[in-house]
Image 1 (cartoon, rainbow, N blue to C red):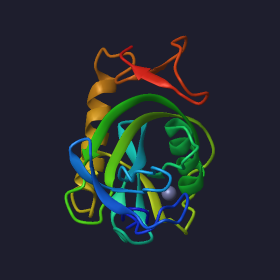
Image 2: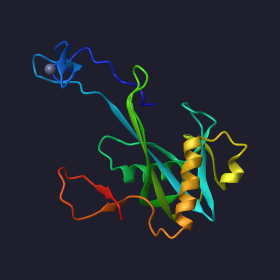
Image 3: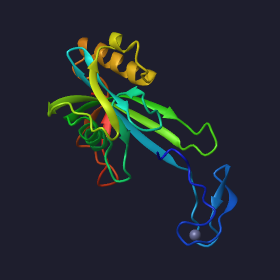
Length: 200
Ligand SMILES: [Zn+2]
């Protein structure tokens, strides 16, 4: 499911054989012909916390990795997709609910710690309900439900998902109007699709 690195033996640009070369303090695969450098690979995942009356939305994964396990809804970000569009899309696909993002609640970083595993970044959003009826897609997820943290004790639930729901409940019941990082307009950035998330 997109977590494993591709081992490049040939240049993906010009098909010349790649050879290791010391670049920026590391041995990296390099193409003598066109100067392509394989810098490594990342995968970006998103998760969404949607709260309703002190309960968080969780889904049961229908496929591996993690088949049978409960998590907050989410998935992988497409190459040309904004992270907030990705989580809204995943919510709609997996649960039938239309949502919008409120803020970025957390970022989980996992650099490569096993051979062949990509550097994996997972961004957790707080979401706001806009419409739709809860209906698991029965493809990616087999069940979907709103549960309070104390109702998750007997579930096989990902600890990070439970943590995110607890944090979101704690943050939104206190005086914080918008917990987390919010999308900011008006800062010029390189790239037509670029977005900036920063402190409110
Ligand atoms: Zn090349």
